[in-house]
Amino acid sequence: MTRTEQKHTELVVAIARIWRRSRRHVAFTGLLRTLVFPIAVTTIILLVDSLLLLPMWLRATGVLLTPVSLGIGAALWFIRPLLKRFDAVSVAARIELKFPDLGERLESATELWDKRGTGRHGYSTDLIDALVMETASAIAGVDLSPAARGSGRRRAVRTLGLTVLASVVILVLLGSRVGPAAERFLHPLARMERVTVGITVEPGDTELVVGENLLVTAVVTGPAEAPGRLVFQFEGEAVAEREMGERGAAAAERAMGEQAETDEAARDESLGRSYEATLIDVRTPLTYSVTVGDVQSSWYQVNVLERPFVSSIRLDYAFPTYSGLVPRTVDENNGDITALKGSDVTVTVTAGKPLEAATLVMGSGHSIELSRRGPSTFTGVIAVNGSGTYSIELLDADGLSNRTPPVYSIVAVRDEYPLARIVEPGEDRELPHDMMLPLTISAIDDYGIRRLRLHSALESET
Image (tube, rainbow, N blue to C red):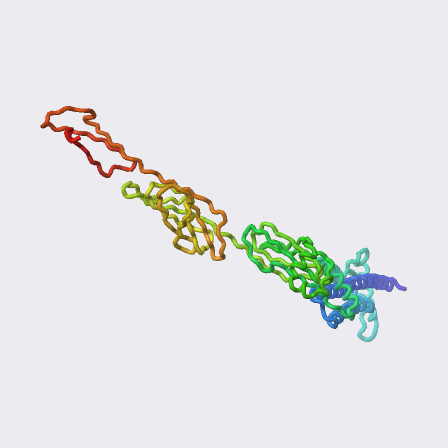
């Protein structure tokens, strides 16, 4: 064997080594791709069958897809790469893609070797020998193993990993439903009867006043062994659940009503158990349902109503005319009234929501119906004839009133008696019959003097 032939043999051996490694990489990548489909198909079948209980023919068709997808994937991505024959020229071209510095020398040296000196159009033997020697020198000491690694291996690993992770998450979320679904998957041709479990939930769709408690009761009939669980979701929050407490057969019988009375034969088996759970201090709308094992009731809506409340109070004072006091407005959101007796105070109430009616309830027992000024604004007049108290009762369109409204005070300020005094002469005087007596009189009052009258009498008239 000449030196050139020896170098050519070394080139072919190196190329064959890369081909064997490449085939293992391709087969491994194909195996990963092959596993994705049966895992995904099996998970989808378990998911749908857990939720909908597929008909037997549809379940059997889905189960058949698992081995079919496994076989097709294995044939395309695993078996076919292993059956490919060794082609030194194509492998050399793949190596050159990983090592651009080689140019096309490796592919040309491999392809032209069998044509050296053949036929009239044969290539120059010396030229081919020089190409082989140059190529052997170029790859000497170079690790060609990176050329054996396929580009899709990482993607296949990532795809399989995501598929397995998604399957695990779905199975965990399905919980106890997975067991029966897996049993049906393993026996697709077995006729599976739908489990007749009934759940009667109270109060169903309902309304609560903000701050009230929600008591949920569930009567379960049929062969259900798992305890009842309350699943609920407040507006803007994540779904939560809690285990319900068992109420006992007596409470279940009362909740069943006429059905329990008319079906005596089935009572022991189907009366089942009754569960209850309470959500404390409900302040936002929510939806809820009850689950027992694999069975779940319908979802129900709970709307939360807010009681009406006073958001602002304005007091407009109109004082008696004789007082000379200027009308005054107090807009401090304080309903306490302090005014001169005989004043009229207009009370303007604005609520935090539209109202049906508003009433001033006086401490003396009588009421004053307020007049509407807007959807949530009402007004009325209190005549201040004496001290007392009053409160504001509100009623909204839902029939809700403000619970324990605050009590405001009414203080009637008394108009004190005026004080008059004769300043001059300020003492007893004796005067001739025809003399005049000048007088200086002082009069004071808390709200002013309207009229002053002097009363006199002769001594002979007293």
